[in-house]
Length: 340
Ligand code: UD1
Image 1 (cartoon, rainbow, N blue to C red):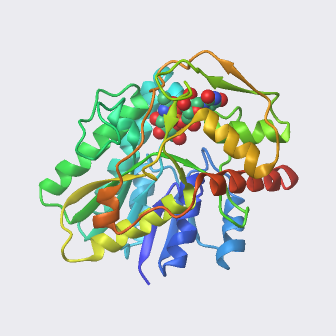
Image 2 (cartoon, helix red, strand yellow; image 1 turned 135 degrees about the horizontal axis):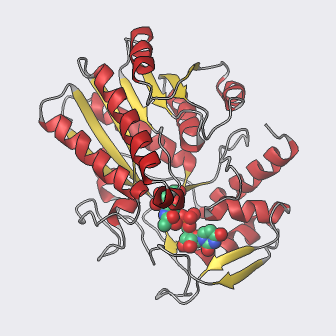
């Protein structure tokens, strides 16, 4: 069985990807420093996949530690690199913290495995497009000047990977540009675990619905969109997790060489108000929400053209917005009754 290193494997997207790797017959090896995740997710994973996956607690900025990891795990066929800081606002205030963590960890991992053939999947983001000139946005759209140090780490990391492959590396690399991952596993045993007040829309909705927050504010209803609120391409985290398996499978074929990049979304945009209504309708829970001012730095609307993913990655989403909302709600209920 092919062993796949999953950095950040106890996080939101990482943990769901571990499940899909096992479902597809791979053997995940999790590395996580627990800086934004919980060790008990390992037990939750065991309940889903039937065994406790191999786990190393390690900060990937620790170069000697990463060398030791590579000595203990020489037979790695693939790496899925999630481990990174991801809070946009925080990155504006602490840019060095973001550049240090997101680049050192990437470079250390690349360095220790560069002498063997490895299939590498990088967690990128649609944030690299900024506000695109044309919608849906394709992979050919220009990468815009990053709005935040966080966004810049994604852009520069893509360039690092591209340069490394162009220089004749043993790595094959796919960057996946995620749109907005939401929802949770159907078992409700894993999901998003925001620390403190959630910054993202869906965890804020579920926390409001369960009574942890008094009300949710819609950040602006005066945008140039049909209902005035911002539009995003929300994607179920389980569909997103499966895209990583598809990326590994593609790199295993002889046809694939070098580097490529794919949009990972549904290809459909939903407004903030549509998400709120979908949540209310599927769960039957009324949300206390109000319209507030715009949030600084938000783009108006974005959704992805996902034809390249359909045609080349042979992957497409299966789960709709209602399923995203219901699963996020089931997870919120679970975690409220069973705090980790
Ligand atoms: C944000 C980041 C993006 C990152 C992604 C990770 C910004 C500008 N972008 O995306 O780079 O990759 O998170 O998941 O921060 N909203 C409300 N009320 C709330 C929370 C959100 O109305 O309480 C709205 C936002 O204005 C936005 C939409 O919901 O229109 C989605 O917001 P969010 O979940 O934070 O995602 P993004 O901003 O798209």
